[in-house]
Image (tube, rainbow, N blue to C red):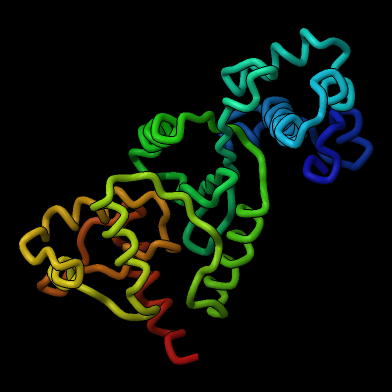
Length: 262
């Protein structure tokens, strides 16, 4: 309902008309998104307003089209989420975040206008720190919303878990040092269903003595599954650190092995 009518406030009475309990909705949003249902709606509307301002629409027209009764009310809400005034929209960078379900647990997905910049399991320990670092690196603000990159990634990830996709084509936005970029690019060359050791990865990068540095860069990968750091194991064949947990790493390895020749 929100995505189909982002400019309309969906009140408790509207939910009841659709036989949806507002109380259950409120509890679900707090549990699964960590914010209220009303805040989620406002973020969606502000994202749409941001996109319209970027495309050249006037602030006054945008404000009233989105149901705000005054420019000051629109400006206050916009600044609360974007950390900048609507008039400075050219300087604002928005990082959209959404949630998706997978067979091994829910994930958060983030995207800029350039591509996917984060895909992590919601129970990752360092997730809050990762969000802060991402906002600093991209000089942007994370708000709930959706764009074409998120929609494409959702579809491709669903196909991956169904065993129907081995390679991803969605655009990525991966800020990092040149070394980190090279490590993440190397990860994407590991074929579906195959495993590398950290030593093999370091050798492929022509840095055979940088095994520890390569492992650290793998650990800083923010885009799970699409940049497949789960395909790298220890030299002794043992599973080692994975932000989603070793059980998920083993599941992903088994999943790819079982669909490798399909």
